[in-house]
Image (cartoon, rainbow, N blue to C red):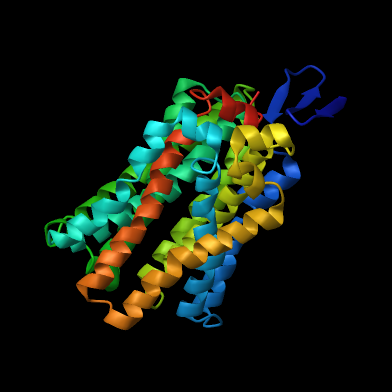
Length: 365
């Protein structure tokens, strides 16, 4: 029996004499090297931070401060670089962008009204949901790239990633005393039931999903390798980090879980922002966005400057007035507005099917 292998950037097809073709779909967003390093392999950063912190090598405060200023805040700025700083985007999405500024008022108003605990609880939920949605978003990009869009697979993939990333988070909140103390009392009692229900649902969906992949393989349908690699990167990491005991866990896991998300996003933003080609035409069309993305050093410098503005004032107010003071809560609630805008805009500006310009910038064709 003879066999031949044909490999391209789109599909690897293995054929054998007397057998139908078996296809393994391997289409990347940017390219194999970039995707494997930044979108999949950068999960190593979360494992490394986890090992360093749990092993007692890196103290909590320096770890979180360095991550927040140098990596996390700049990734929030990345969203602003392609929206508020882009003249063309301001014209096209003016109502969305200016209306989103109302998020700055939500937190302070809730704190003044006496709902500070509820606000910070909901903010934490949205922050984690944002992580989950980004992993889901990358999965969708790989599904589109690899023509993996059968309705049954779409539903199963969505259920799998949402449940597999939600269960460990609920289990962490239910079991960690510091996290549980931040949950409003009416909800705390139901967490045990929710945890059990999510575990049963996750295991059930995972079994059906595995069966479906086996069915695809037997039926000689293309297997979406980048999707599998993404799931193998993000799901085990979330389970390990969220289910491992560690000191001051609610704060520590924010940096540990999110650094992977940050690096993915930075690379996607930089890839997208290459549409800001150099020259007078780009400066005229896009304004400051062209300058920010003209060189990597500019993008990094602007991001770090934003990080200093985003983090230093609220930490200073917290140090001067004490963490329990209402002034501290008001300042913290106000600065959450930047994150909320980032979360909200991200749910709108990456819709490849609805916005052909995004698909073109990300080379989804």
